[in-house]
Length: 235
Image (cartoon, rainbow, N blue to C red):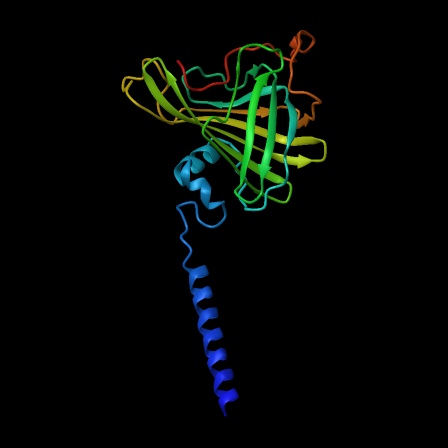
């Protein structure tokens, strides 16, 4: 009888533990982006920004099992598909860029991102605050928050890059710049208005892998000349 009581007590304890585990899993907090994106993305982007980017033609890939995208890729020819900055550069070509992704971590959805012009000019940058990746199968979207200062004005911007990993190349890469916020400049004299968006596509749909992130004079022969910096921040 003693052994039977012990068994019943253990079964009851096991049942209570399983119930508690199930309750905790069901009660896990979910941010505004819902369950189709890594929850950490709620720290840097909102559903409203995603909806705005999609409305203007940007591809956004959801999912919590993104492919490995580590590597260096040539974004060329760089074609502007949308521009509401007032510069009206949609339909024009920009300079070629090299994109570098590294140190991707599948546990916390982080990835390093950097870019520079293939011609070696001064237009370069990358993630300086927080960069995360979403996606599934071979499709991905990288969200990179950039905090900077233009004169006396602090701003927060987003680089969003989407594409398809295809072996040694990337397919259908798109790249958007979005101004999230700024402190001051209510008259939009020094910086473009909040919500300003520029979207670019690799026009031929294929971004070849590169052996190095370095640039040289030989790479200055871009398919198209640079018309304007890709940044959508400064006027």
